[in-house]
Image 1 (cartoon, rainbow, N blue to C red):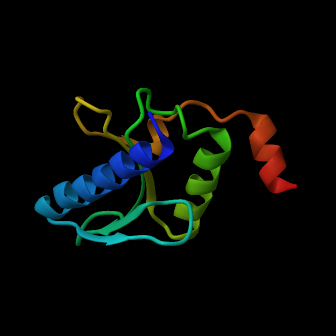
Image 2: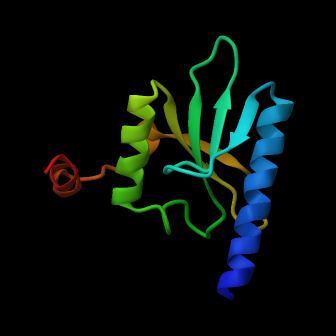
Length: 113
């Protein structure tokens, strides 16, 4: 798949995730800066910083460094870091950071340095 095609699919998935969140009552914004693609807020719920992926496997292009950076931004914003994984021909899965694979001490030490 070409880079342009995967970018287009990724953008379409981002828009689709935003639509789903809006239908659930969230106020949703596309984020141009930072580690998240989408910011979502809803009264009575913790805000979310959402990274959207439409890859074959959820962490295929969302490695330890990217996951740690998003977690740090979420902590700074008192928000929940979430991966919205929506593969081609698959269903949307909203995966909170508490369910992500262990990052490993090596990456934590690099960020702290």
